[in-house]
Length: 340
Ligand code: AHR
Image 1: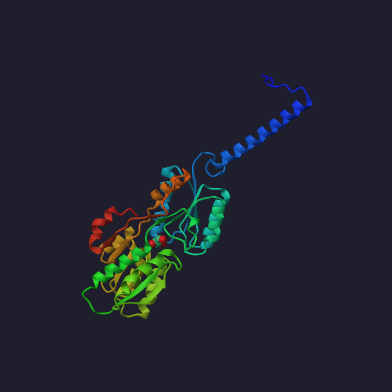
Image 2: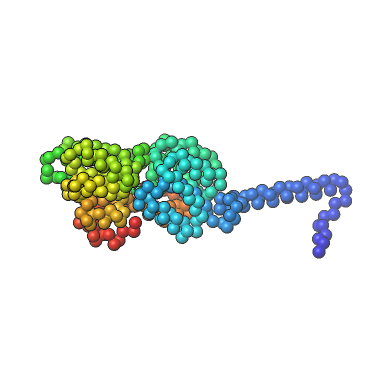
């Protein structure tokens, strides 16, 4: 069917005005299509209206990390958020590449768990310039400019270090003898390694009987935990306590202690952080004395924050996770409740 024009131009002037009007309408329609594409879930062409979240994970170094990844993937699916997931394999440069790729893809929100604390300002500025909000999860960045991220969701690692030390102070409250401590640190330069050390030292330094005789990084992995503990054992004959910044390193160290003919949990008391199932099993076997909990199940809270940001709602600058401390005598009762 032919549509009759509403206005039939007859003069040259009328024809010129109509041509201009049509050009303006065509330009406006193009602009509207572009705007709609930006709001359809990151403008990545999916066009299904979902919020798109780019997540740059640290790696798969520990049971904690695996539980964290699963929590994020399952929660994104449950919340109807499209997740673009990248595993940086413990390398900062891979994480920076992933963030740049998310910026290029114009995702709606970027979240990441910074491998180390420093060196993020440039890429975070790029995200800010591209108007893509960034959420820090699990680990913080050390930056003077806190406008580079919207919020930080995760544990208080300094407090975790204090809790580990408080158990030690209580355990040795009736003794005046020197307590020789060895420390397995997490990844060098990472927030949990720096903060767990700081919190622990803040408490132990108040009493000179607590002596840290060796302290070394073991990358939050079992293999490295075992290797470094072997070195500690051959260099030091009178270790009383091992403070491991995570369960995987503690579990690796247990193997080294047993292979050296010693009893973990008795000859050498063990303080660990995280609270993964295997650590609870080790506590029921009397091999770990205390675990300071660090909760990896951040997915549901992260998706709430992402949904709020996508809806233009304000979020708190710091969202803390609630955690406890579990001793050997509580382990058997608590083990069936562990979710990671
Ligand atoms: O950032 C959290 C820490 O990273 C966990 O304690 C450790 O297990 C992980 O690798």
